[in-house]
Image 1: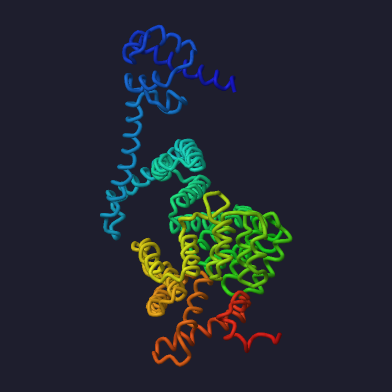
Image 2: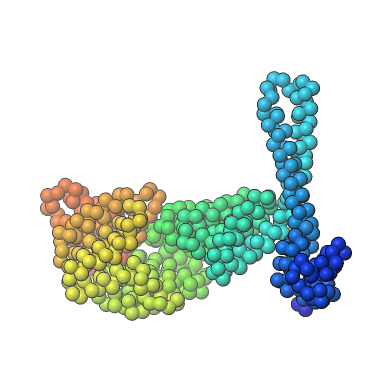
Length: 514
């Protein structure tokens, strides 16, 4: 390290001496506001402070890239001349192309037109050379900026990362290096994820995956890794069918070798989770079972939340057992809170509020909507206070949704509001929220999934509130739809439906005799 620093200091001294050949040390001292003795020491190899380098740039018009690395021309004015020449070459190309565009295609044989075509050919040749030079000159800068961008994101310096993103957007236009283009897409996706811009994250990950595949040189391990990242982003946005298509397509592309790769096994395991979420429970569990044996450190570790949720949905374990599966983690905690909300029982709610909600890295935030709803639900189950339930719905649940578009978020809030009011004894208010939830579910865009627990809670609310002799035609239809959905879900393997006391009577004909 000391040798590297010494070599860098010697190189700076050499460039300062090159300047001293054109200007006296006294002149350099005067223009930089330094003493002559200090300038002399720097020229002999003493450590040059940043302030002196900055003064050289400002006082003598020195190119900072040349001063630090030796790249480019010593003076900014000379760099400007090169830039002007480059711009002139480009302008010449544009003018030549415009001349051709104004020709009539039937008159390309005239001497004037042939001369214009020759000029265009010469301009294109110069442009190709210029483009190669741009690629060569920008590659190092592009790579260095990407390194800085990566470091800024890794350390959470988002303001610096945004500045670097803008700089990279400009530099990337001057480069055709495909490898650097893929690095940029990956870092931009990381940045968008930090900013919680999930749509942009998905778009960038999608471009990264398909451009990587299109190059035809990526190893199977990399393809599976990128497909897994994209599928997880889609899962986060409840685009589960899209996530499953990505998993299955990547696995088909890589072939049987995927199951021998760590990232391929993760991808296959994720497809199992998605199959459970989408109602193909038996098929999904069989894949998960295979991968638990292969990668127990994953499914009992950082991804234990995915396993716990799948087992709860399938009814393979009860809530108490689920709490003991795998290592603690925020993902597991958030899924336990969601399932406790589904159960609507005081003990599971008390348990998650005590053990899964909090400020630690292994807990879900108490300010999150699921945790706040769990606390409100426990309060309603304990006190049966209808006014408190209405206040919570108005001031908390819907207050945070004013800027949201209709659809999934409003459907979830309305389904939960219906449950709160029903438990609080406000049947009229619950029916109003039930109708709203039904309308919002219909507004969810095609291709976007909804949490199966929320759908189940909505149908359970319908069966609680709508009698079989209901006179209202729309409510009768909602009841018929609810019964059909619950029965279909139970047949597909959703064991959590069978365990529910409200739903079980509607499944009696489908259940084996005890």
